[in-house]
Length: 165
Image (cartoon, rainbow, N blue to C red):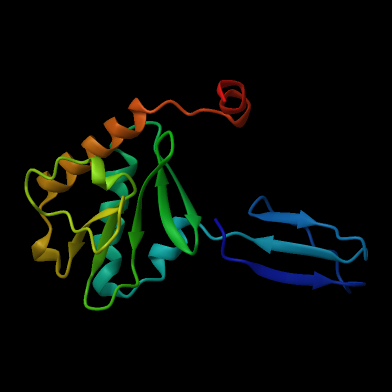
């Protein structure tokens, strides 16, 4: 939820009631700023028809794969979290319908030889140029393995890390 819509209100003619989808900020100059945050759902909804149904289906598969998975817009990109960054959907690559990038992809087994490194040390991606390229079984296996890897890593707080050093 990061798409930013700014509306500065100085002596508004009518009363503005912020809804729960707005965050209210009141800077020192006393003008009110309401920022609307984007959701992954909104980003997907704005995709061209060619991508919309496919990406919405992928999102649903990811969100239902494990109860701890959450989503968030980071760096203007849909990210999915499970204990830490799990994967993101790269919707902007030219000549591709969708790239699903796994943050700890270098640890995945890649038994189907479908993961692409693209000169990246950690991230590996499943790249789909058409819907026909998509194999749901391979995607589910890769996603489940990525979730297992993420859940096996304990989150260490800054305080715990400082104590161990």
